[in-house]
Length: 331
Image (tube, rainbow, N blue to C red):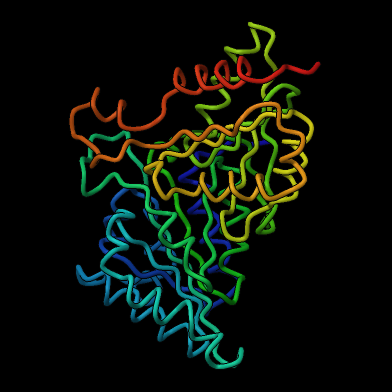
């Protein structure tokens, strides 16, 4: 199978949906000739024209507001915010309007919009352009939250998002844009609420999101040399969350570590840990659940400080050893 970068898979998913459905259009800052802040939409204005690839003013509130309004009239807007940090400017439109309209009108008003946005650290973009705020929107009933970690997943999940009649917040980690993977040329969908076991193992379950999936897999490679077999579960969507796959994995391995880049305090890791603790998997645990997340600090500009602010491979390796020492490895 051919390989695409994560970025190319995003572009291909949008292009295929736009060719199929004239109601799908894009809005965002500099997404036309410039191709967007990270080049995701490069070349699309030449194919679809500036009526469907619409440059906007520098106002995230306006972008989100127009998206809500156009979605209510039957269009299917995809909006791009250059950095996920700027979602804070559009929170009223997303939280008080997009997330609630379908419920408030008894299902008669649909809001089929997709908000795509690059998230995460690792590029030296500093405190206002490197945050991971997915737990904010995951808290809001009515919003679906997606965090693909591979090129294959991002194409299939983006098609599902565009086809959904509800607002979807679609996070794309900046460091993943250049990563390559096998991606079918034909359109395909990956259902929301279906996790993927990226690596099977017997000793400990690591539930990881976005870029942390790759760090967890690297840690698993290292630990394999020590005879420790790690299972890596990628939820892929936070809302809806595939609780069944996570619970079944924890029952098998009897140990759980949750890893995300967002600040540990109030992060999605606490929700996953609580969900497992309230399930039948709790009685199978041989050690306490371990959470790894970002430090409660703004993301620094300095490269070494930036790395220190979020979990790294060495932190995951040490967490696995700590959990297994406190519990019992069952083979």
